[in-house]
Length: 430
Image (tube, rainbow, N blue to C red):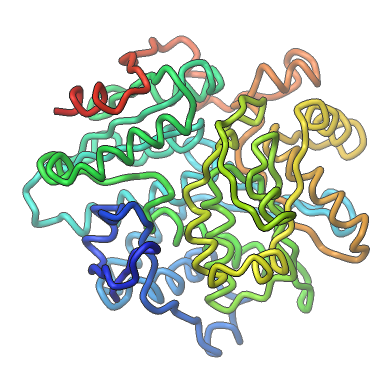
């Protein structure tokens, strides 16, 4: 299969180029030339398939022309070694728990798949691969875990100083070996801008053999579509879910749109954002106006210029009317998010992290005007990763800390300070 740039459909590359170079030279994003569709033989039996079997069917639909079935099966089975259960909170109110992986965040699915696919694509190259990633919290930890000590790779993680939680920061900065963390004096948007500047410097990109682990990379998005299909089959037959997605860079929602292209029936997507509401404002007005990001307690969603909006536009033929028909958008304040954390614990005995709380608020707002809907809110990270917020709302000791997080508390942070300056960053890379 060939892949083209969202900026220029005439710019087309093969799978290896699309995955390893990540970003087209025109600053667009890669999309498949033709979207695959899972056939009737899949949809007649999908409710009886395992999570791994669903993942393999999706991966083969996208990559089967380029990667042998045996290799793809091994990649998928190595990726999905943990569950993603749907938990019912109340009638019509469901949560999809995506935090059961090694770094307790949904990014584990994409990062683990991408690391394995890249290893297969570079198996005969003999060159070190440099993985650049900007993170607003969870991406960096998942990528660091997935690539830690992988031969032939080095990982450079850029994160905004003072804008990730303490335990998230420890996940980025304590592994060492082939993992380097850069503490950028700026926002996530600055980190993302620095990463893109390195890729658009073609001489630098070629010399260092750069690739990206952000959701600009298709290898991150395809495996995230696995759990949309996996979760939909956990609802009773005949019910089309409304997926509610806490959103920042909009890779997760884009992966859900990929699932619908494969044939998954979905009643609606709801984009739930914090104060960084550029997409909900677009859905309301038809005007897309990126702005500087605002720091909130749901920090992984603090994105003022979401990269994947270009893919969303492409999927809807750049039609605002078509997009607003399928995607609704709601935005909530930190105060509302804090209140939701308390309410859900008090009334439903369930602990939502700040991102899931934003999603839950959006689900309530949707069902208030669409009674009878079955919402599935994506709970994207374990509450313990945001201990300061959770304990402020629920009390000290209210959230159990999984051992793989608890052991990080005493580890020494190792990070290199970096200004939010493209010249300084590229000089450091060189």
